[in-house]
Amino acid sequence: MATFEYEALDVSGKNRRGVIMADTPKHARQNLRQQNLTPIRINNARDKAAPTLFKPKAPRLSSKELVLITRQIATLVSTSVPLEEALNAVSQQSEKEDTRRLVLSVRERVLEGWRFADALGEDKKSFSPLYRAVVAAGETSGDLGKVLNRLATMLEKDRAIRSKVLMALIYPAALAFVALSVVVGLMSFVVPKIISQFDDFDAQLPFVTRLVVGISEALQNYGVFMLVGVILLIVAGWYALQQPKLKNRFDKILLALPVLGKLIRAIEGARFGRTLATLFAGGAPLIDSLIGAQRTLGNSYIKDQLDITITMVSEGAGISQGLQRAKVLPPMMTHMVAAGEKSGELPALLDKTANHLEEESETVINVALRLLEPAIIVLMGLIVMVIVLSILMPTLQLNSLATGV
Image (tube, rainbow, N blue to C red; front, side, top):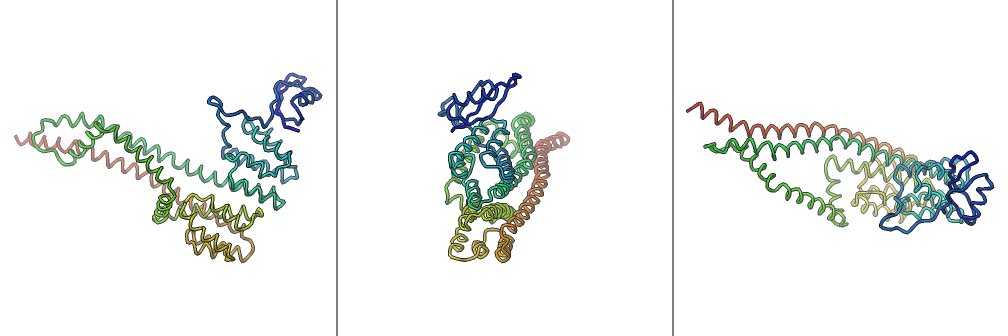
């Protein structure tokens, strides 16, 4: 049997939407009429039109939608609702047509006998390998609801951190943009008109004035080329960082920086610990859990160094020993893992460590951004002061010459 989406009118004339199981669209219409519904539209939930120039592929799920769907499925499955019924309920709850169709497609595969993780694998853009690995571990352990709850929590925390950083960056970025625009405007339009008054100045202009005039003329004559050059440098830098060796060196340099390096280690450590806890608590083998947690990291140098940890664990060593040998994650992570291995509560301690590292990272980011705002204002003030001095100095010099005459 197939799953069909329908739109129909009830006896009172109200529009109804939902899903219905039937062998063919004709049978689906018959079933709807038996329910006193007049069918208007019936579509197969798994029908996907071939992408064309005018009809692109359906977009993948956003992080917000993924978290919501995961939490809804986890809640329903935890209350002993069958998986296919949980998926049906989630699809009806969704307001977006693409999301509803995606969930119904997964449901139909589950009804056909697919494992849930394999059914999710048909849409790799929406469900990452890590997501599917956690779901597979939950199916193997027989406690899918608990594992999905842990997965939803992990996704929520990851999304919350990104949202906080993004929101905190908005004001400094806007302030920097406005400051840069004001300086460029002054140098391109205001300064040239004022400086032109000193064309008949017999004495040599002060150094500050000559410097400002030179920058102003450069912006006027080569501003477009300078902008293109900056864009090309950004593109070239982005392309260079796509090369594994260059990115590895760049990431290693970042880790060596005083404040930024510690912050990156804390963020990556929190992500590694939470992912490892989710996978391992879900019933995934230890090596697979370590590999899955390693793949979520963004710093390529840390990721490469954790190969040492995975190799040592596969040879019989403890995780804490492997992390201590790699020396890329915060020392607190190593000590808490060692305590977790001794007590048998590794997932719980990993979660606690991840929470602590996330709080520490958030504090550092907030302090840094709060310091960045006055720094931008001070820098803006210094630049304006230099521009004002470049105008005042020759003016005062000209007045003194006139007074002397």
